[in-house]
Length: 213
Image (cartoon, rainbow, N blue to C red; front, top):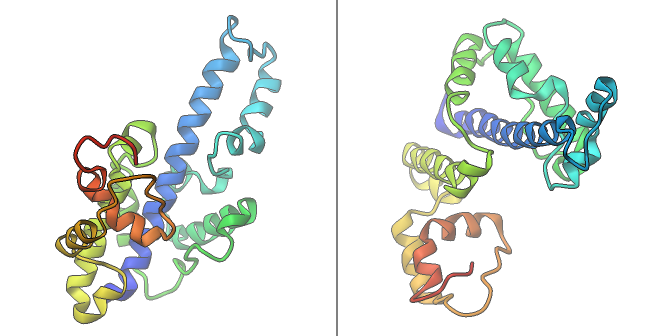
């Protein structure tokens, strides 16, 4: 499998892990509030508490993607060694798109194809499972961005000239940022890729004494 194909396998799973981490963090926070008698959100009845934990609105209100049970990372990792793991991942992607309209048609859904080694796929799931991505601490460190940047740089190297279609080397980004000089006002990430490219250079974007982004 060449880099052009492999990148979709890896980056799709990384995104899935990211939204699952964010979901689980929100779920733990909700569970703590609902189970604390001193909290204004306290719910004494266990069944009612569970229903609240499974209420999609509780997550969307916090700008967190709703992740159905079939798509949660814990579920996928528990089945990582199963021959059907590719099909399960495809079903997880379909379920996420169904429950989050903003993601419709965005996620890869071809993990069940025969050409994809399911043993390696399971090992990849286990490996990604060791990386924290979507919780508050790792979001503050921009771990997801760094992981994406690393993989994209590797894919760009493997694909040669075509790599520039989806990755811009950091040295080029730094030159562009210094030319644009976004040191005043608000820096708006109007395009995801540009935002991803500029983000690593936060100290450059901020400029002398700048603290906002």
